[in-house]
Length: 209
Image (cartoon, rainbow, N blue to C red; front, side):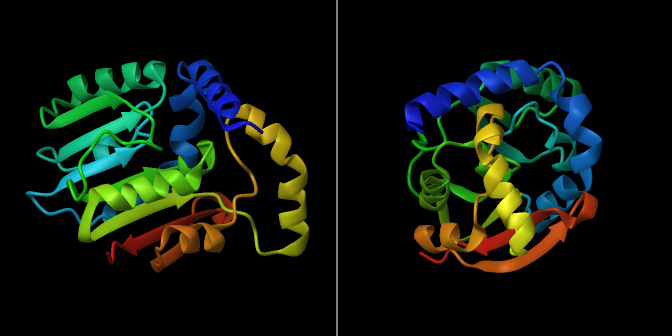
């Protein structure tokens, strides 16, 4: 599928999801979110980037004084995140509409970066991870929480079969983890399964530039 077309489909999908996203995705995926933020190993002066911050469901998990920049492709999702920032009184949080494949940040600008349930929802996951690696300082943590294609033969084939439908809904069901990390030049320091039925992978990488 053409990347530009796919990006439009993703935007349309999440415009529709915005009003009901928290209701559907909060409780199911909450354990993974909490574990992902813990894996960032945040220090008081760290500047953190969250890619695909959406409605800001992760915001309560950050320390109140956290210096955080959150980006998302969907203005509708970010409008919800703005409300959450105001409710939580987090003055050090900045939210921006931005394409994660072309981040408007300098090289080595961030200490750490996080993407939860985002990598399979972007048209070019390799480009997104490369950008995350570019803007994170050497030795900084890059944490990814996502569903990846199963290594089990039958399940993997099923994920391949439903992939065209899932793509139109705004995410990929059969994104393989190992080739993705290899193309970007990252390796998993920690890899664990989380959430319902252990269907999602929590990956922590150290940015060894």
